[in-house]
Figure 1 (tube, rainbow, N blue to C red):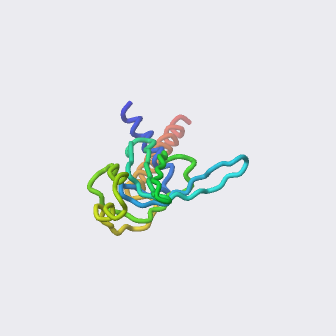
Figure 2 (cartoon, rainbow, N blue to C red):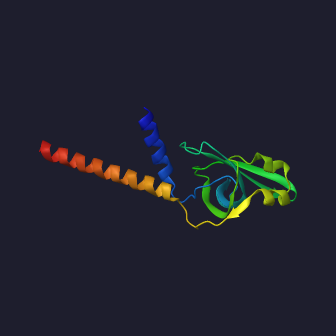
Figure 3 (cartoon, one colour):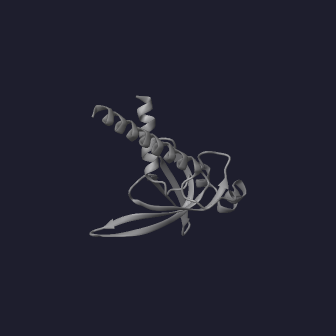
Length: 155
């Protein structure tokens, strides 16, 4: 049962390889599809990732925070949601904690002192996701060759 669950999670995570691997402290641009009546439009939200819950599960949740006109705005999104059009990594910072809830009470100046900017490579899916995709493709290829061999023996 556990093995099936692991395979299920891998398959779901490989479905969206266009998403970057996020960490707490990253500044991202999220483009969400919003449906208003019959029309759909794309709304952009740029903010800092303050928490990722269920990072290894099939449906991780991301909390993104920004300050707009002096008011803090947070959105909580399922990372693999169909509402998300794209996620672009703007800036990567090194944080000492996994959840940055203390950011809610701090000013921008003190947050800048707490978080250290780190250079990053611009790319979508990380190496880990690409490795998982290759594993799944190799496994499906092996299964199809086994099925073809069994069919040939049966005939």
